[in-house]
Length: 275
Image 1 (cartoon, helix red, strand yellow):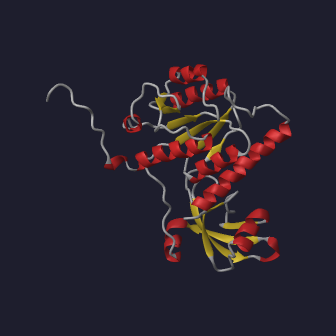
Image 2 (cartoon, rainbow, N blue to C red):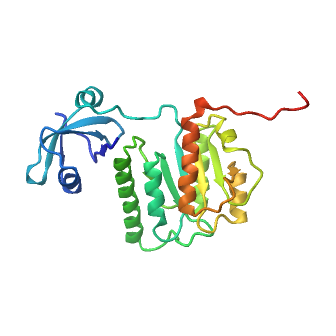
Image 3 (cartoon, rainbow, N blue to C red):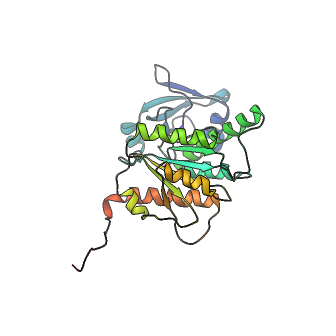
């Protein structure tokens, strides 16, 4: 269900004021009027129900109510948080053109926890450039994340990082492994490598899952060796060579579905011997 994402929390009286783009979306696009209510997510992830008090003068004034009893009274279903699902992080090598915008949108809609763009050897876009241009690109990604979460109703606090170079990416991966023992890294690569199945990797109850996707030209042999040396597990899904924006959605969806249905499947290990 769609949930509006609030930029700030209510005041001590539980009141909130929304203006600008937020006002336009709620009043002009969604046509909310005084007396109506909408579910919303606080910046820290808590859920509230906002009852509209007034919409005059370009400002929506609302009252924040506890989510569960108020939502039930209004006929809204409860939030669909997936308890026990480990956070999924996307390590995405920068693609060309506007493909990264699409990848960010799809990752946020799909409930990924974090998107980490980075410059790989075959990335055409580079991290450098005017500071204002980099800030504008990052601000656009943040806006896309918010829009995607509101459209999809995802309760996952998806975040996006400014682009990293390859060394900073691996340093961040080491931080994640220290903070989350048992972290699983999966390297999606179009050249088959020695590998287990995706079910087999996810059967180990990882505390966090990081997916590494290359740009249009894939990863170089040196980069592939570096990912494997850092503990990433190789995976090739099928024989098709996918576009990088398709591969990101394809891989993330496969991982999420398997994790969501983990209690209904089991690994069948091959028999040994003649028994």
